[in-house]
Length: 348
Ligand SMILES: NC(=O)c1ccc[n+]([C@@H]2O[C@H](COP(=O)([O-])OP(=O)(O)OC[C@H]3O[C@@H](n4cnc5c(N)ncnc54)[C@H](OP(=O)(O)O)[C@@H]3O)[C@@H](O)[C@H]2O)c1
Image (cartoon, rainbow, N blue to C red):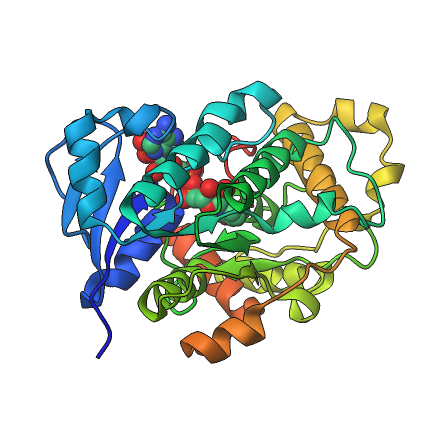
């Protein structure tokens, strides 16, 4: 009989944290949510809440509370992070790097293992990456901070796994998400026929993964007591290409009574800066982010590495086509989400 583990979940209020809590409702693991703020309310799906700031020594807890928490916890899911793109490098250090140090220190004290939420975009910084990621790329500082956090965990000697998800979309069956992220925002813009063109490098896959797949894999790893391994939560070779993604958008638009002529896919390196400057500010911003994300994927070889077959087998993940999950994500977003956030906010 497996032991019921007690998990400290950092980033419980985030998209990944909420997906984990939703999948944990069966009660197979006991979850203590680490949240900022002071609300005494226990997040749905969690068993208890602790208030703390990941970037502070002992999460900002007093010595006794930190020690007591460490006595209770045997596993850490470390999902707290600064996920906004386009910030200066030093903005990511307190949360993404120092926060990971705090999570590792806590785990050492608790004798716990850590499951760390990194990003598939670290593939773009591999020593053998086919292209060099430009310093001005909107994702670069964020991705470097996640790579540093991975290294810090390796150096810590704390038993851990690293999960590297690509951009997440909604639940694979319902499209549900606790809030919209970049894929929903950009897709809405495209489906409204506002994209004059789409900058994607030839050969790039559009790799997006339903958030419940990540949550199920992480909770599966917790229950099995996994404490090592690096897992790319991506579709890899099986990810859709831009043509397939735009077909999903066109069908979705048609279901909403709109005729969408799929915009042309262009080489991001050939975009005329003058033409870009003439576009409305929102279009400039979205196209710049799309161009940079395409560069990040290109630096990863166009096709991200994947561990999905292995994760599916180990954790019994039901197969789902990314195009079906993407369609459900668009359906959910068009009925449930407002589309008011800036495109840089959140992240693979
Ligand atoms: N979502 C994706 O598409 C995606 C893809 C690849 C990798 N990831 C990785 O997965 C992790 C979770 O992403 P997400 O999408 O859930 O991010 P998110 O929605 O932006 O949530 C970030 C979480 O971190 C918490 N947090 C930030 N600073 C904190 C601090 N100083 N102390 C305590 N908590 C803090 C936030 O709490 P507040 O609510 O208080 O701000 C929130 O719960 C991140 O590390 C990210 O790098 C995400």
